[in-house]
Image 1 (tube, protein in one colour):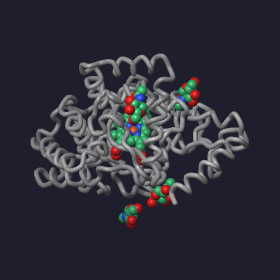
Image 2: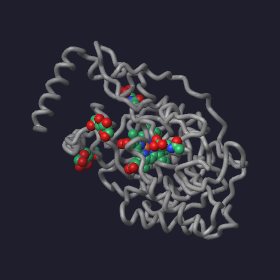
Image 3: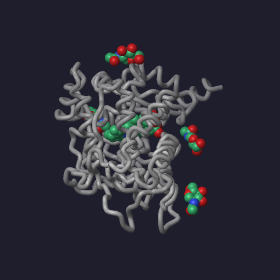
Image 4: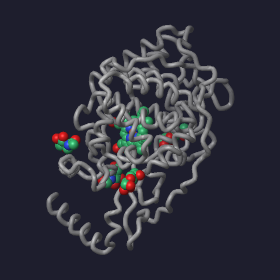
Length: 366
Ligand code: HEM
Ligand SMILES: *[C@@H]1O[C@H](CO)[C@@H](O)[C@H](O)[C@H]1NC(C)=O
Ligand SMILES: *[C@@H]1O[C@H](CO)[C@@H](O)[C@H](O)[C@H]1NC(C)=O
Ligand SMILES: *[C@@H]1O[C@H](CO)[C@@H](O)[C@H](O)[C@H]1NC(C)=O
Ligand SMILES: *[C@@H]1O[C@H](CO)[C@@H](O)[C@H](O)[C@H]1NC(C)=O
């Protein structure tokens, strides 16, 4: 059955290729078109790349580059009024990862998706937004049926509330959890202090997710622009992308670039017989270890996304990929820790007010 469907799909693809001619080989997203912010694969239609399903291509102009985020008001060891807070979160995170390593990857990604949309304010955890019936971030295309770790954050919040009610924000718990997951998945090689003092936001909009989060069908210029909009540089972008050495991805996002390691691509397409929602490991070599293997995978064309492969598309990014790929010390680990702290500074809210509070429950504003 599956084989017949696959056969039919291959014939359809071959027919399409014959129809559209040379453009069909213009794979990846270097063709210059961005669909739903890079979250939807462009398709060749009548000799040109277009967005499927009547989607209008996303604009290529982004918010202008912002200043490097300094995280005013954040401090290491912030919770003097709840000295056990960080240890309590660490224990919950370690237990969750011991049961399921994928939760660690989920927690690292949760932090990224929180910080890039309305700053690191736990807006990604809200099921609803204030003053509107619009869908919250967690229902946006990059997040829906994809983000994991919400249960771990809820458990950590419950444990912290039991120790010190009303003191520790959900935004800081997300940041601590991402730090602790990085430490656990790197077997302790990535270990760093995470400044805290973030407050929780009250607004969360699904429509902002595809606008600010770079998608897997993005080209290098788009990736750089979306990081620059948050005050992060190209080096931060390359360094943080190393998080793709853990966790999984849905088959619908896997690249069809001709340069993809053909053996690996063949293995992936077998693992993807379950369809676009089936998942595959991001790092085929050490899937549960947060390490610099990602950069060797980029260099060897073993990475899943066009956006990963795009790191070879400029001399600046390719050079950094080469440096991390060749390093047997801890250059990447050290840089990753610093970049996570920097990402954690994005648009933080530190003054209580109409838009900032310490939530009682992470999924709903007070
Ligand atoms: C550079 C631009 C980036 C793009 C285009 C991108 C894209 C993606 C996509 C498409 C997935 C798979 C999602 C799914 O299948 O539903 C994914 C997974 C993941 N991403 Fe990224 N990402 C980027 C940067 C980052 C950053 C900066 C981090 C964290 C520092 C990160 C951490 C992760 C992790 C850990 C996973 C696996 C999640 C899991 O297993 O649950 N990514 N990313
Ligand atoms: C990277 O560059 C190659 C070769 O110029 C191009 O085919 C590809 O589309 C580019 N990919 C991205 C994601 O920019
Ligand atoms: C919040 O969002 C959830 C999920 O979208 C919905 O089921 C629920 O009714 C909403 N609750 C409130 C108080 O609006
Ligand atoms: C290509 O993929 C295969 C199968 O996963 C792997 O054994 C091989 O080392 C890869 N080649 C390179 C150059 O990474
Ligand atoms: C993936 O799952 C979602 C939700 O269950 C479903 O709506 C969608 O059609 C599935 N997509 C594919 C490609 O199978």
